[in-house]
Length: 430
Image 1 (cartoon, rainbow, N blue to C red):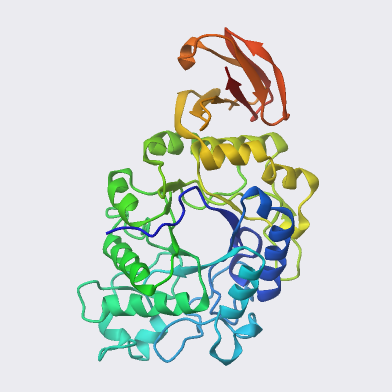
Image 2 (image 1 turned 180 degrees about the vertical axis):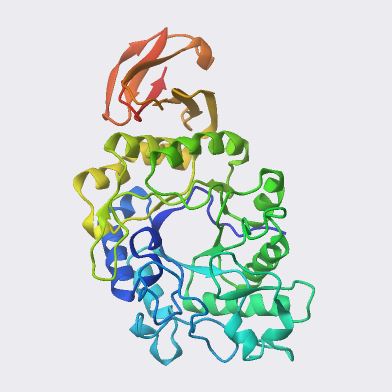
């Protein structure tokens, strides 16, 4: 089955989870979209994604906790629709179409989060499946559930009406103007540790539904860690898939990402993007009263994260409240040379990794080479790699991507003084 002609380079965008959890509203979505259009669009940032629980009127009333067996807002066919109190423009059955239209008018694209499966409420109410003679209770797999959210049952792929249910929800999303769908509890169904990719048939149904809906959409699968043995299947049916569980602003989680990128480095290609998860930078963990905090990552750790994500070519999905960005956070997202590497480099490869350091290389379209040196230790350190170890000969001009300038020439090695938990990124041009 072919995939739509989307995500030919790693998607760049914003997702509401890291800042607003399950409680994002219309003003926050559109406010961040406006910020992106005014400050980031020229650098390639384009997706604005509404994360989980958008159909739940009471989301956020218990902070970031999910409300067990929440009463979701559904249409007569068991399809979730936006909660009116949080998304007032959805009144009159418009759904997310008015928000999507405004975001499209800004020159951006709109995305939503869904859980795999069919809502429990639709099952218990025996609501009909659109366009069929069956009902939601007949397609539900009641032994297929999510460990951390009670909203859904899985869909039994072999039941009559199962494919039609997924077709119906993606037809609805297409009518709204959705460009990106993040599907959760599907990349790793971690309630079932012996069969972490047990929902692969639902992945196939979702891909088929996208192909049938008449609109191009990026398909992103969460959470991780994805199963490397199923890389062939992920590449065939998805555009993005998470290689980690939820990633937050913790150094040990960042350090562990080097191993995950090493495992997945050969699976990166056009339309197929192993996903390191959202970037928890800027103001995150915003509570219902508007309070939040800035990332716990140091500036050096943020540079390490942005460097690794970009040379590996992970999608870059910012998680903070962008309207609260400080100058440093904005500078991370508007480094045009870094964005070029993420969008247009190729052949990323880890050169080495141990407890104290790591190094990666990749190639630009113009034939020059990127070299990233990472200090994984708790002390500043001088790191270097020889040109011979890079399979290079001759004299090369060395450009410091983070400093934004040429720093000389070399025919021997590239070297950097790297702070603890920090990184340097060079571009070598002959």
